[in-house]
Image (cartoon, rainbow, N blue to C red; front, side, top):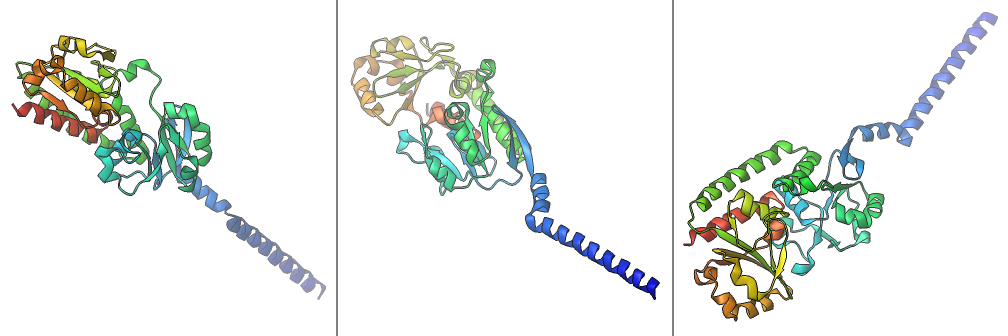
Length: 326
């Protein structure tokens, strides 16, 4: 009898121990510790200008705080959840992407990000450039994982292919590098076709002017993706005043010295039209060969478009349209 009681007591102790273990496991599951392990598996690390940042595997609410990043995201058949508005164009979407961005939240502009709005959107990821990072990186990083795109390498910045760097980085983030390369290859084929047409032109000296409220600026051959697309990729020859590296302000009096066969313009919305009207009234402008030959074209946001695949494709189409008018 005594032996039987001992055996029963041992069994009861074992049952109690097993029950306690079961309760401990239940408690761990209820506390979410097991879920944390799964969450870790659903994240990955991205290298960028500010080091390493852990981001979610699935990205539904990405904020694009630079217009070119929005171009890149849309080119990958994705859509940003929030974007910056453009002061120059009334604070709304960048015009050439406006239709595709319809419905995306606007979180201020690049000079004034609405941090409360950013917080309210509960983003998965925030994409910014190094300029904005110098202003509010720490604040954004407290809200959501924040990746800084760009480079500090001056040689890379001046490369004709520099614009591709951010595109490929964003493609890496979305797991779509193959699609990004396809888009670049398709664009390059279109550029080569346009370059062949331009090379056959007898006159192909080009000046790109930006007409601002109180300034006339002549863009250089390099230093900006638009410049390298026009002169390096498409093969236009620079006007006599176009500098290899530096954008410069011109007075109306020296504009005839450009000796340009084509003049492409970007007219800033604030004050630019009035300045252009004044220029057009002057014989210094009206006597330009490009004006007399009807080779002056007002472009559509090229300074912005040149940073992305969508914009660059539009530019190439527009250039071909201009030269085929003759």
